[in-house]
Image (spheres, rainbow, N blue to C red):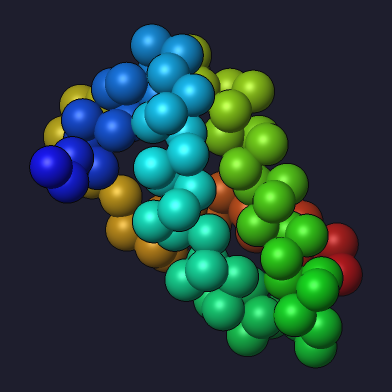
Length: 86
């Protein structure tokens, strides 16, 4: 059964490593491609997305889940700090 983004985020906020893996598996590649548009190295794009997922795990307890819905651009904007450093 495929969980909704809202359910995955709820589970992530509760500390579920499985929810983190589901989120990573669902969004890692599309976010890496998105980040690649802003830098000239796919390896750097992947590093940026990995940093984003580390930040997401570290700050999961602060997630606001009202009307929770993930869009690739929403997650990508969380990583814009890293992209701007490039």
